[in-house]
Amino acid sequence: MERNLSDEEKYIQAKKKVENIKGFYGNLLAYILVNAILIFINLYTSPSYLWFFWPLMWWGVGVVFHGLKVFEVFPGMGKEWEERKIKEFMEKEKQNKNKWK
Image (cartoon, rainbow, N blue to C red; front, side):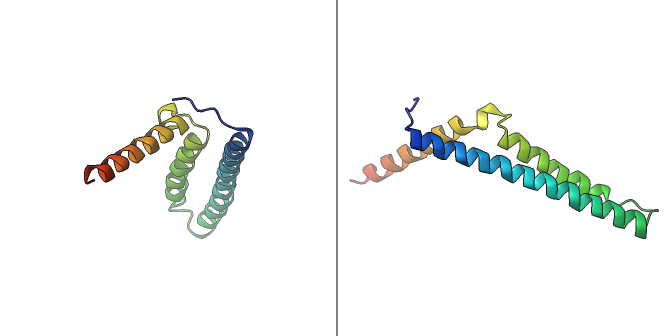
């Protein structure tokens, strides 16, 4: 099932991976900056009720999952899995078209 990739295909895949990593770091930077501002606003306006924990926590969960996906921590759901699923769906589509001929 292994494909031999040309240099151009390898370059495109590497470029896409770099763009995904760059997107993650952009998301992480926005998370840090926005939450720092929210913490300041919360502590300045209503220090008796600490509501900044909610966006910090839920956005943080999203950032963690984004990082896990970008850095391929779950190998079962990586590029190989995507390729297998694409081929599976293409094969099913081909079988469905041939069914009525």
